Length: 208
Image (tube, rainbow, N blue to C red; front, side, top):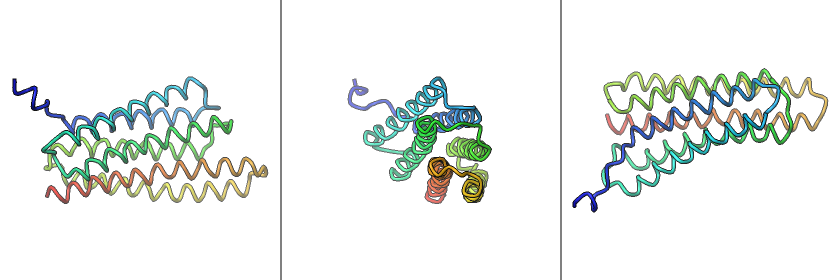
């Protein structure tokens, strides 16, 4: 009878794990796309489905955050972590959509490098998120957050070198505009990965 009044406890840790693993799947698909000659409809739909799952997972966390009286850590940090992981997913989906709309041909070596950095970042994030269940993992989680920051710095350097190469070698101004936007959006994914790492660090500090 009481179960009618008190809903089943929502497992935030499990949901974050699922969200992080979906992010890894998105990064793997993203790399597959940028390493291809073009963004096929099949690959676009695959990426769209992964992004849809990510939205569903993020919504479930947000929805249950409003329904749950006691949470494992601050509500603000739960909201920020779920939102930022979903945003990384959204950015990768946006990039692939723009590449298809702009009919950009690949593989582009700079985009492959961006995809590699994003994949490394989200895999590190996934490990850090999984470690949040046990604060004995604090040192390893902090090291993971530092690694994500280092990968973001590499992304900054890659963006700058990619733009220099683009401006020096591409003669078609329309192509310059298209690729410039793609490189900048791709680097933003690494910026948001760093935000995720900062959210995780905030959780650790408050739980210490």
